[in-house]
Image (cartoon, rainbow, N blue to C red; front, side, top):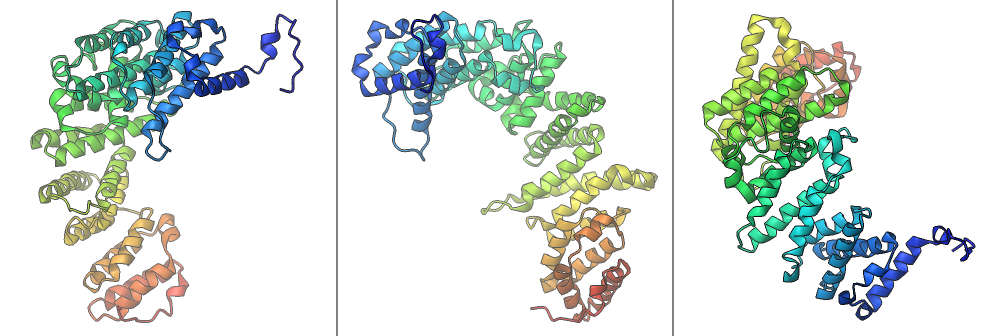
Length: 498
């Protein structure tokens, strides 16, 4: 081992390689399982928790490997395996030793696809309940050492055990059984506890779809349970975690009809904060909230008027960067539609979403052109919709051109120029793309100059020069490029479209 050990020393245990001993013990347990009869409660004779933790760590590895189809086949745990593991887990809890390895084992046991022996139908719930109700120093006094409630929750004993509890409930539901009433009552008791940490609310919010799948009826009858109006920090933690970490689902809105209004109100409050450390978190929450509302809008999960009102409220209180990010994210979502295509009604609603927003921007700019600084980012992001082939081409072209014409300076145009050049190779779209290129070049900016590549744009202009209907536009584009200092376009010649 590299260290000389004095077995007469009272500190001899400190000199031993306990981790090496633990690894050897696990090997022995695997090779000779018959020597470790759980009825003897042999683990009570081991006084070093590191050894027992290693046994549970190995068990957790087996459970995870069994659920991984890419891993070699793993032998299904025997009843003796379960008896040993559960006995060790209960012993570690009883001794008050470090629980991290134990809670990971319990969590992965309930997350696994393996069936647990019926013998633990009473013991396991009691163990979960005790761990959840026990004092958790990592959550005391609303401690948030990670600066993020969800991270604090998943690194706490109670947080991990609540996740395990939900998986225990899912096992019952999947088996066709009624979920034991005590499970929901335990969750209710925790969130109503006056000293419960916002971290637990964040954890439950991040699993809102899962919770609704398990306890939808009960939650619908108690909408303030997870989003308490009198505990702002706890409510915000749950709401923010849902929108950042979970996905839209129409049943969520049916269960919590006030959730969108609550979230928009929280976003408005967050926008008043000036703390730079939380700026990115605020933007992420805002962006995700905007996408959720948009999804509910085009899927008609809520009445059209309510959806439009929610979108309007969102745009009115979100920062300009957040609004722009939402517009860009919608373009990303529809950039590559599914192979089976999209419902025409959804396409029409998405288009209407931008039409309404663009109309608002246009009216406000007509009143005060100085407001362009508020909307420039949104208009810039909207040009990414040009590449979304699921929308009618003429609609995309028209709105992209209108957006560019209202900008004072061209935005970062790499993606837009790439789409213009790609579409310009199609004869039927050549004239329209030259119009967009011309409108863009009339708004010179550093960002535009950095995006211009001769090898990409030259073929487009050459094809335009060869077209009688587009020659004038192509010449104008060439002249604008020369004025910007791109002299390599000077001797560009006409080239027929292939």
